Structure formats: C-alpha cells, structure tokens
Image (cartoon, rainbow, N blue to C red; front, top):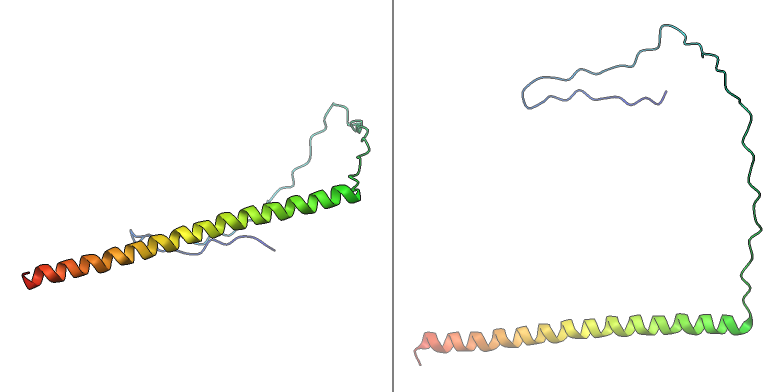
Length: 109
C-alpha cells in the first residue's frame, strides 16, 4: 500500500529512467527449523528511583539562582547591544569626516 515510487526523470544525457514497480514473490519461503533454546532471558530487577523533594528553602534558592542567571544573561546581551551601537556610531562619524576630507580635496583647498 505505502510503497515508494521512483519518478521518471530525464538525465542530462537524454537517457530516461523507467518507473520500477515492485513485484510480489512467486514462491513462499518456509522458515528453517533451528536447534537452539528459545527461552526468554531473565529480566534484571529494577531499583526504585528516589524522588527529588524540594523544601521551601531549596525552592527559594532555586528561584534566586534562576533569577541571577536571567540577570547575568540580560546584562551580557545589553552590553553586546551597546557595543554594537557604539561601533555603528563610530563608523558613521568616521564616514562623515572622510566625506568632508574628500570634498575638501576635490575643491582644491
């Protein structure tokens, strides 16, 4: 029912690949008898997992740690944004100065 079909694609050489249809097997294959043991393997015993219990103090510490991480990441991102803004202003200022210098050179002063 859900079998992939290969579309007919012309190759750059002009050779057309025909659509290949899968064929059903003509003879039934019977399984060969084997001589080994078919018993199931023993299942290992599972150990009970301990649950993590949050006390009010550990919950407050976890919230404070999460807040500190948010503040540090925010400070890093703001400082990166500030660095990009300062760099952009510096490049714009240099472009204005260079334009004035080139304009003065073209006037012959």
